[in-house]
Length: 66
Image 1: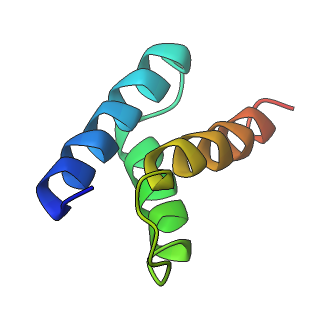
Image 2 (image 1 turned 90 degrees about the vertical axis):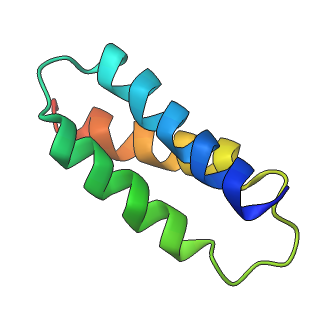
Image 3 (image 1 turned 180 degrees about the horizontal axis):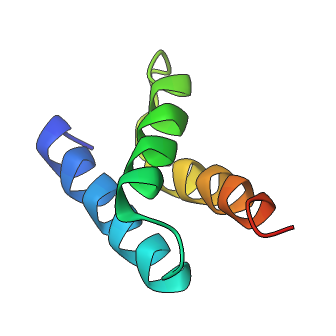
């Protein structure tokens, strides 16, 4: 996965999470996604990064409601 594809994928992750969490400010979702993305930034295999970021961000956002 190239850099531009990964950037588009992260944008899509934000869009999906914003739709699932309409009560959370989009900026908060963007920050969570960026934080999770940074935590995986050192990896060499990039193909699964968007999926891993989405799962981790979704879990963190879910805890905002508990």
